[in-house]
Image 1 (cartoon, rainbow, N blue to C red):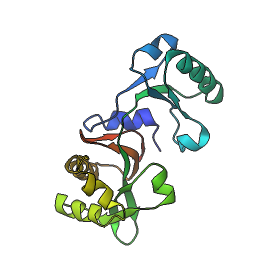
Image 2: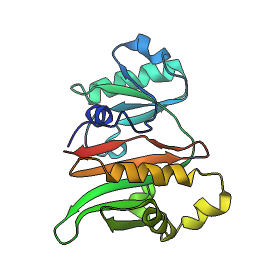
Image 3: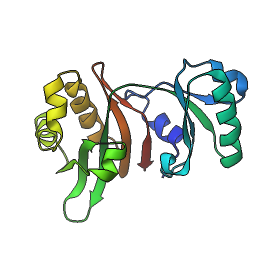
Image 4: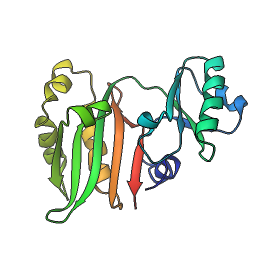
Length: 188
């Protein structure tokens, strides 16, 4: 599994949340508050306390010290906070069906609600649209009309064409402006 920075390096052509590697305390002012500090680990960051929100500089300094203690071998990343709904896109190898595309509601929803849909690749935009319509919470996306679903569909199609074995893009923040990858776990 690649680290977040290694994954982001392979995904430069896709819409990524703005991020910055924090080398020293002076870097903490180079991205607008509020933002998230993340340790660049491949495990689930939230569960391990490797993601913390920073609302101001003093909080960011304190959080950076704590993260450096907990994750001394990891790079620390500051990442912009993006408002929207958390979605997930994944790629998975299946013995019977080959490579599959997963779309669904992400973040904590991915574990609790498990509102996802799978399709074998290759796949068209129309088929991805059908996948989304199968989601239990699809009405949330359609009824509010404040989400750029077309950007999410386009992102899912681009991800489906990546030359990688397995991937978990969770969360992807979907809002009225687009679909932005916040975290990625890739196996090449």
